[in-house]
Length: 311
Figure 1 (tube, helix red, strand yellow):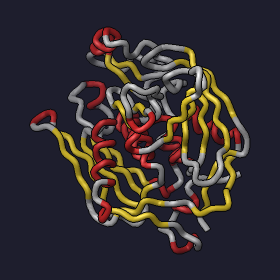
Figure 2 (cartoon, helix red, strand yellow; figure 1 turned 180 degrees about the horizontal axis):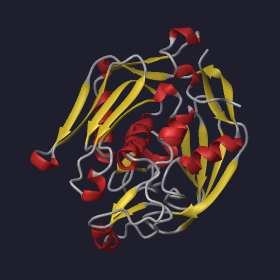
Figure 3 (tube, rainbow, N blue to C red; figure 1 turned 90 degrees about the horizontal axis):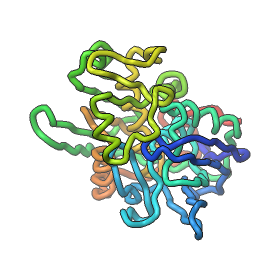
Figure 4 (cartoon, rainbow, N blue to C red; figure 1 turned 90 degrees about the vertical axis):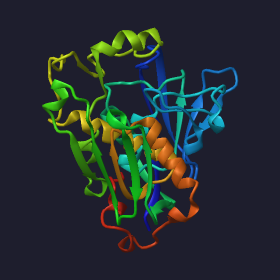
């Protein structure tokens, strides 16, 4: 059986939110089968639980934010995509996340620190089958025209691949890889994707901070690019780190559906908003997917049963 996974013990981290700049403590706890991933705002007078679901997404400006039932006026948790990407990369189904502020800490700007936290807590198999969302037909969403045209697509495939293309028309970005195709079943998430950091342009900093965003951002937790070059002393971690971070984000954005996907994702200039729009379009068409589990791992697409080692 391909089984559900949770943590063996709890683990903690302390950091700052990249947008709000506030100090935040994060505690990751094991959860029973079929719990899914649930955030708990324990800083509030009455703790509020925020389940990770497609329709819990309440804001997608600069990051993915969740609230109960997607209510924009309710307590929320922001910038969840890097932690969710790590959970998807390690095949974690059930997790309680206690958080003491509105925003998940940015840590080093990638998913690598979350991968380390999750692995240090230990990952265990549970006595229940993992539920996959298998695509049965192609769903695509499009927005804009001309230079602002973008699209994202999910289609049937015997596995889980992600293909992303960027187009920033920027000297520093243009010198790097613009397109990546990543096969999740290859077991290389930790090595090939998790270390890709978020990035920002100095020309956007004043605009963002005027809107109360990017207050916790620095070269310690982001790639910073001026009009011509990358400013970080250490340069890039991958030759194609910009587009790989977009893959990292997409993995997290798609994991808000609550299940690993069997299908092929491809996108051109997509972002948090379009990724969530794609999931909502899939869920709005019940004929486009089916929920499946595998009592015999040999019946599953190759690699999906061994998404990451379990300790």
